[in-house]
Structure formats: C-alpha cells, structure tokens
Length: 315
Image 1 (cartoon, rainbow, N blue to C red):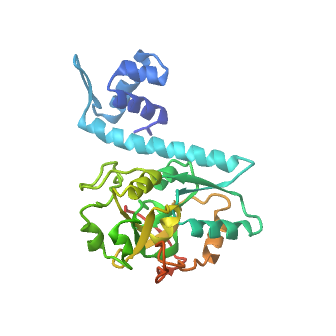
Image 2: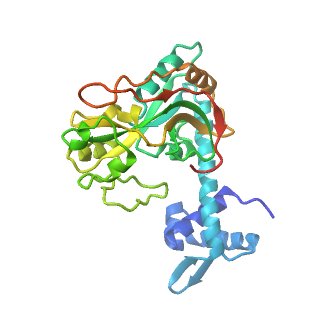
Image 3: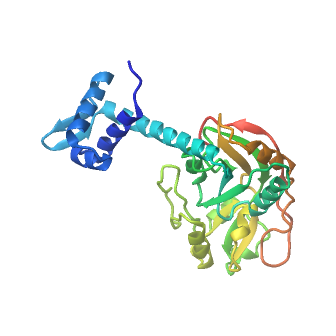
C-alpha cells in the first residue's frame, strides 16, 4: 500500500472535524467535488469506509474515528518538525525555553546566568505559559526545551535532566487560622471546610470532582487565595508569585517534586548542550525560610541532581 500523504490527511481531517463536505471544502479553500473524490480515493486505498453518508449528513465510522485520532497526531508532528527546522535555519537562532509563570524562579534565574557566562552560548528566549501547558508547547515545536515538574507534568516522550527535588508548601490566606501553623499535613489542608483546595484541569481538560474552585491561571488562583476562597499545595520554590495577602506553610508529607529540563526525545537543537552543561553546574540553595510572612522557620529540603532520562509514558 502506498504511504499516506499529508495532503490526504488534511483533507480527511477537515471533513472529520466539520462532518460536512461543503464546510470542509471552504475551510481548505478548494471546491467540494475534488474533496469528495479525494476522500473516496483514500477509502479505496485503505480498503475501508471512513464516513457514513446519508440524507441526514456525514458521520465517522469506527475506522474513521481511528484515522481521525492518528491523523491529528501525524499532522501535529509534521507541523512541529517544520517549526523546528525553520528555527534551526534562522540566522538569529535562539533557544526557546518554556516555563509556567512563577515556577522555579530562582532556579531559572541561576540557570540563565550560568548559561550566559559560557563561551558560545546561544541566546535563550523565555516563553511563559500557564500550568501544564509546557508539554503541548514542546510537542508543537514552538519551544526547544521546558522547565517542568515530576510527577505533576506530562513527561511522555521527552528526555529530561533533573535539576532540583524539593518539598511542597500550602499557600493560604494570611489572615486564615491555618497560616499560624509552623507546618501542616495533607490531611490538615484537606480538612479545612471553609478553604477547599483549588482544582486544576487534568491533561484531557476535565476537572476532578471537589468543592474547590476551577482555576486555569496563576493570577486567577492568586486572587482567589487572597479572597479566602481556596488554597493550594505547590513546590516551595514556586511561591515566587506569592502576594502579601498569602502565607506559605510547609506540608510535611506532601510528595516531593522534581524540577526538570525536558526536550523532545531524539531531537538535539543547536545550543542545547551548552544549556544542559549549565544546568549541571547550577547548585540550588535551600530556601532561606518556610515562605510565611513573619519569623523564619526550617528551610525546605532541596537536592540537586543531574540524571538524564527518557520518559515513555505519562506520569
């Protein structure tokens, strides 16, 4: 069987998305008859019917559903390859590093400073995103490398280099009685009736069940905490965005979080080696205090490591 062409996949995807040949043809900027012929030819080549067609409209068959999923991944990979190639050919080449806003600020600053001091270092452009978006940005080829967190972020298909493993803190309203505690447990933060934990979307975009508010951005979350509507548990170093109306309390039994540099497996953008060498040289210092406004307490545990691994499944 001949190899499928990206043009065929684009045609098929347009019809599968629209479930209407006329709208799909308009979206593609072509006439409807050649689009219909192309789909029929694709079905003959695959030996399977991709769409059910009747007077009521167009619907995907079970086989068509499979191709729809696979075509989306294939086209995304082609587009990512094109973006990476164009950036590699750009004479003003930079390394684009994506990170969620407010996360690992001190570590990121140390990494950028260490990298900039190295001979021949390619300039680094920092792209800020919201929570959980780094993996998608990397897969689309819009960035070369990302700061992500294990086990929170989706590391499937990426090579990673560990930078920092640390404990977590609860961010609560400074006026709340919980803010007076020297430390808390996960059970403590789960049992605060007037302060439910915020809910972030899962990888599929749905939210877990619970009484806490649904949030999508750091700024939204920060204001809800300041208003006394929610709390959250985050890595100790991510409290850089903490407001004066917030307090941070160490959570003694929260699972440790490891900050990693991640990049797509089997790719090696120009200049990445220098950035990774700088990452090895960075030695994060433990936090100076426990993050609360007031007397300092015992610092959070921070351990630097330099292992590199490839992740083959979602974490």
